[in-house]
Image (cartoon, rainbow, N blue to C red; front, side, top):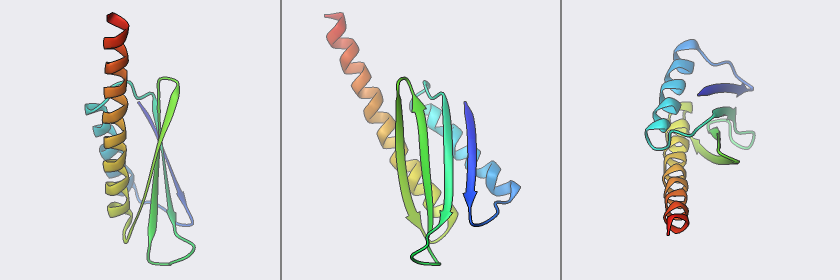
Length: 104
């Protein structure tokens, strides 16, 4: 799985990049059909203290998107990863139910 990380209006350290890549790679535990992932990190323009993390995950014929806001990049990334985890679980269940209907 390819992970692309973009930071807007600030620079991201190597240790933070590795930590984000680890969090994103854990998403394959929930669905192994992830082809690539784009992580966009940004400082909110409305409030200087809030950070925004957005995850764009490409799966078979679809792109799943989650976005979260937090006081730090880490908290925003954790929240976005949790939202993506739930989306992947729903997507996987949807695929399973379609397969069951197809097999009947």
